[in-house]
Image (cartoon, rainbow, N blue to C red; front, side, top):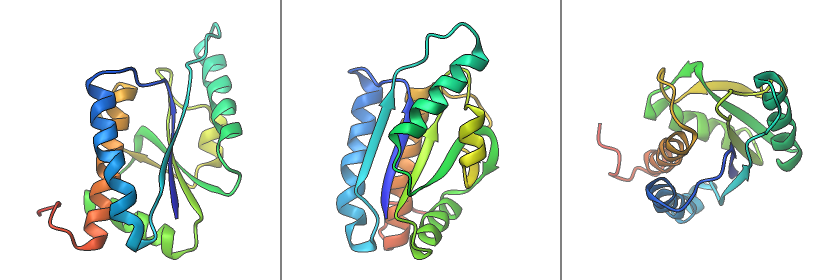
Length: 160
């Protein structure tokens, strides 16, 4: 099962991008034997429209246009369902076992997710009840994807 992160906003050079790349580079080799990966990232620029509603609409449409049609979407939102790392790993495993070809996690921009994303998402999950900047949310997400892969592989990275 391919894994994709679709995000509004582009990571600039610096600590967020370095941490993202650190974990992203680990996902594909660690997940290969499990049928998880490769991991891809789709970044789009933030909208410059006048209102928050227009920005969410444009960003949602742009992301959906860039994501493969066969994707199962998981939207990230602070109001979504909370998961432990083990539950998140089970979610990935269940999607893979159900024959999902591409699981795509969507991170919205500063104004949140567009309605089109929410309507198309198979589920909405929360990384935290706190609002996270998009760069940090992406780092937390990719680390949790890597952690999920190691949990499914029985690797000792996750110690609980």
